[in-house]
Amino acid sequence: MDLIINSLRKSYDGHVVLDGLTHTFPHGAVTCVAGPSGSGKTTLLRLIAGLEAPDGGSISGVPEGGISMVFQEDRLPPQLSAADCLRCVLKKSPSREGRIADALAALGLSEASGQRVSEFSGGMRRRVALARALLFPSPLVLLDEPFKGLDADTRRDAVGFTLSMLAGRTTLLVTHDPEDVADFGGVALRLDGTGTTQR
Image (cartoon, rainbow, N blue to C red; front, side, top):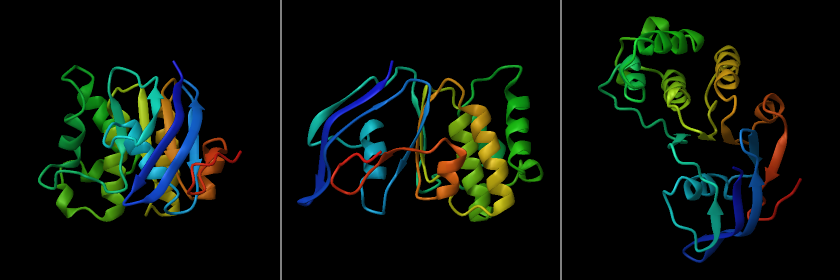
């Protein structure tokens, strides 16, 4: 089922962020959402995730089975290791430890598997947050600037891992980076701060 946004409105303290936004996000596809800071990109993700309520309009087609999200902040428990952060989103199974090891290896974090997140650099935390979201078996994935702060090599690895994990999952990728747009198929929705859709 497609994810459908219809006449969505949201404002904060009288400042309109989204005003009548209408868009259909195709089931199982990646949609890049672009636009300048303050144009409502993060707000859109938070509304879809149910973290905030819209002032008007509707959101339909949010699938049952959970939502994975990479926030602008990494939101990792600092006392946990990288591997433990990933164990939190995977049920116990014979393949769980192998999946965790594979994800950390793909992101260049194998040697840091047992380290506490509090000891990590910003780029390392970002990759753990990305792995956590992508390993959670949800049909809807919301990614808010997922490669922010990564250098060229780690970004390449992170993009490759992300692409390998999104097959069949409806995905919204918020970005302002032209490289992200190129890697994930171009901008399908551009916000200008008034909820206007530009293609």
